[in-house]
Length: 141
Length: 141
DNA sequence: ATAATACTTAAACTTAACTTTAGGTCAAGG
DNA sequence: CCTTGACCTAAAGTTAAGTTTAAGTATTAT
Image (tube, rainbow over all chains, first blue to last red; front, side, top):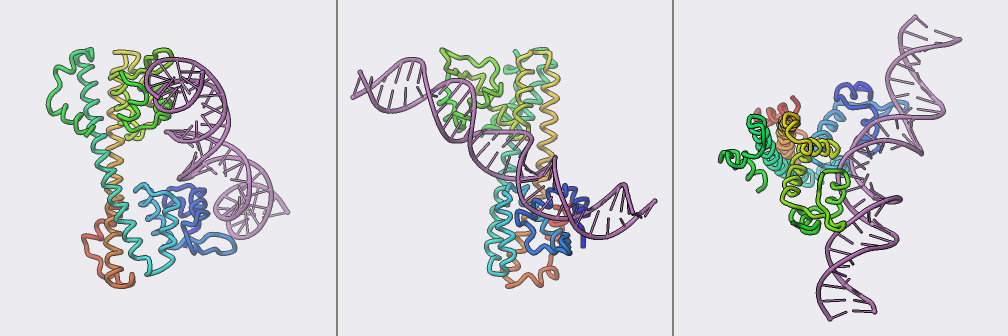
């Protein structure tokens, strides 16, 4: 059993954030002893899931929905699986987006490298290697 | 030359967003003809850079700073290059984070797949394949 | 005993990035 | 002439995800 302060250290999250998550219903059935929250291993796994779903781009209210499904038992296995499949697809899309962003950034790094070497941007278009052009193009597909 | 409405269609951005960007100083030197904004190819490339830097996690005020550097000419090539190198590193870190998130999501997909097949979560720990365990572990490194 | 520390709450505040609203100008078409 | 549609502004409103504040309780250390 952990106090809110211990969980805060373990996850490097402000205590206020943990209280906010609790207030938003993200820890259904969280135990309390004379008003004080007691986090168990179950809540730590919940917190791992919260962080995962947040990074996948899910909003707090939808994470709450998921936690409600968890409280409802076996009936909701399919919904929960479906949610994770959707988040997986969303993260895959996001990674593709980021790969394009990365290509644009690489292009711009090359661009300023050249500008510094050359002392000016004027002749950059003329000496654009195919490989760099491809990065710029990929970034805007 | 493009009107704000045409740029809005080209980039699928609300007109209000383009006005907001302009108000925030993201189009320094944007031309106006009797009050009406005229976007040229230069502004379209600026917009591509804005979208790129935004996706890299940069805030509007820092994008504005970059645009100011662009207005200052050759003196700021090194700062601009340095910014793109930093954003590149940030996006690479973000992609590593997302790869871990993806592993957690894959683990959860497997988990609920099993729970559905088995009709219960009770025996899942016992039949966790090494490959799936690795995903969960990687997600929390 | 008293002071520090860790916990509690409700409610107000913050921030970023827009979005909406309310009012106005201007050119073209019926 | 007058309505429609695209443009303009300033200012207020929105939203999410916390954070801060102000007040209080409870346990522990000196």
